[in-house]
Length: 420
Image 1 (tube, rainbow, N blue to C red):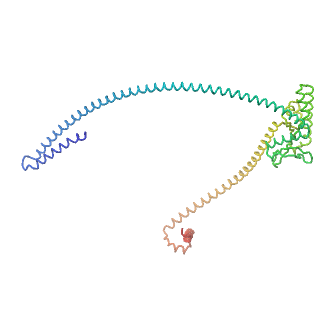
Image 2: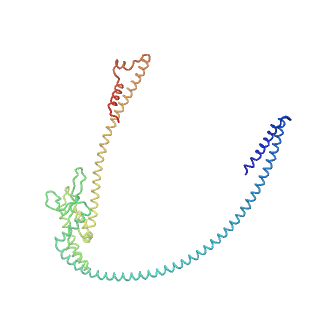
Image 3: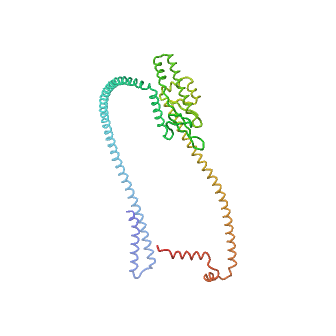
């Protein structure tokens, strides 16, 4: 619509001009055509101006009416929208109130259900607890009977343990189990003669690597002892609360341990074939505790180059031995690595010297090439006035050049190659 309003004056002016031209063309005689054309043009301009002014007034009036209509429509729409918003707010308030009431009712029902379930669960748990207590009391009663049977079995075991060979076998089995648990089979041996030239055989011996370069090993002798008679007398004196008998039993136990330690030191400890000490293994933790508790006993055994261990302390000592073996292996590998690095350093220094020689030779060769290049340029300048011969004549006179010979060989080789 605005486009038509803008084009209408131009169309009317064009039409008026066309009418005027037609009139002028049909009129055979009359006044001056130039004056008549100017008159018509002025009239058309005035009409066009009036039409343009009328169109602008009409456009302003229509725009004003459209603004007023849009304002009224927007006010009506906003009023309707406010009404709908108010209605929606009321509906939402009603629904929220209904949801709150429904949630409160559901919470009450859930509370009642939870209380019922808690009561039922509490009754069930209490019943199960009473039943479990009864079953445990029955098992305790049964355990008392089993303990009585076990006490009888302990008495039988005590009678079996009264034999020296049986006690020694039990100590050896306990010691072997510990060694197999901590060490590898290659790290210990059974029934070993640790000292060359002696017939004394130790039950077990651990291989300890040397720190020297020959890669040999030392023996760490371990012997299991179990002075059961002295230990049983000590336990009996403790149970009877007999102080004199307890002191006597403890002295007898210390003497038995000293005799066993002296036997180990005399038979199995002989540096440099063995370590500087041997190990006396006591297979019972209680027996080991009594020996350690005796004042001055462990220190005196250390002076005789014997260490007293129980199952726990022997396991810890074997772990230390295992760690020491790993440290020695790492040291040996580190020594080998350092030797390799030293050899590499020596060869690298030689390589650096060789590289210096090569560098100097390359510099001399580069200098020689520069000299040859300079002489070639001088010769080329001197030969600028000389006429060059054709290639066949030059080859016949001077012989083939190396580059030409190489090109000819490449061409011959390419002809001999089979097609792809």
